[in-house]
Length: 282
Image 1 (cartoon, rainbow, N blue to C red):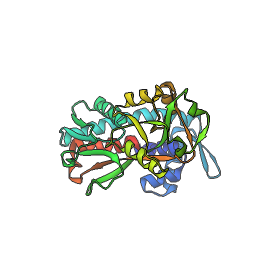
Image 2: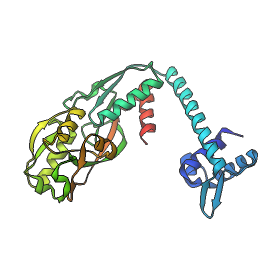
Image 3: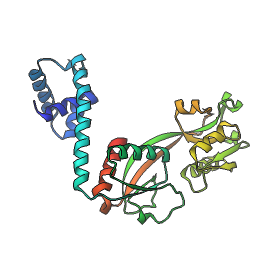
Image 4: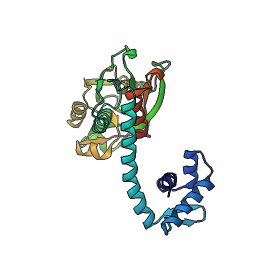
């Protein structure tokens, strides 16, 4: 039994496809299929039920997949720890201009595995001295010319209101909401720009009554009924906070967040954290 056999099986179980596994590892699909068949022969049981061009994980396969998930996570952690120890280990300077709560969670998760790594994290929409930072988290922009970049993820933006607001009971166009009070993030924030752009396209300037760069305060203001404002779609959490989504025919925004970094910074602890983000968010 070889490690590569187990990896081929684990990836195929996750993807439900030998072809997708082959694409990831850069080998023919027949090689993956043959490798899994050899593994099944060595174990003395079938791991997949094969139907035409489909593979379905059976009970034995699910047991092996679960065990390998634990084993591979431990193996990856050990390899990552050794890699970090061999490489340059220094403070990671991080400018966060989007998904601030998520990035905080990622840093906490990473620090739990690698407590020796330190961060200098700045949450600032107004910062312009980009060269001071190893990694910048922001929306798609041409500000960071010469930087390498990759997408973290895309989210849907909804217009939010208090859960008991009468506005939640009917459909609207964005123009019909021009007389409403709006809650916004700070003027230099991406979400403020998104709000003003959408309202401008609808033919009006939003009446912004409060601005806040603190997520908890921002959501509490909307939940109080003081005004409406845009935010990331998250049904379960928003419902628990007393927030609801307005049904707006011409407001369907998507917000994509990227990680930017200089190629010369892609080394040691910075490289290790970038690779962690890449893997965590793919």
